Image (cartoon, rainbow, N blue to C red; front, side, top):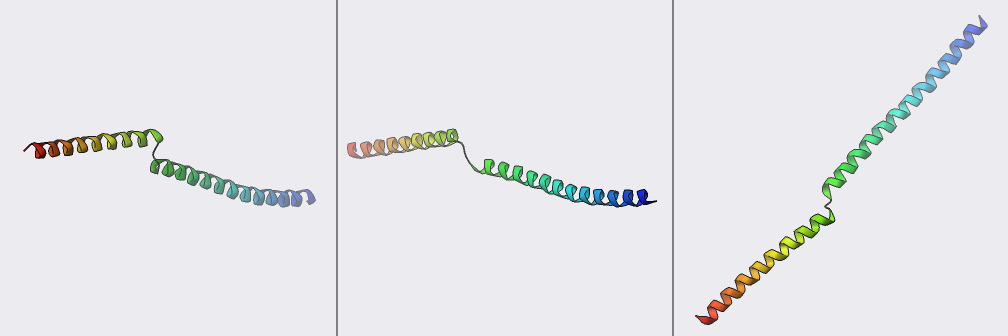
Length: 80
């Protein structure tokens, strides 16, 4: 009889510890998912160096074309 009581008590203690550990592991899994989502959002918002370089090159080309048009207009105004 005494052995059965100890079995019940120890089983209860192990069950409580297991339940607490399960809660901790569930929290860790939830935090891991949130961390991964945060990493994805940050990566989505930031641009890469290559993207910045191509954008700057396109902007430079556009400014060059605008300056060329202005020079052509000024030349035509001076001639006429």
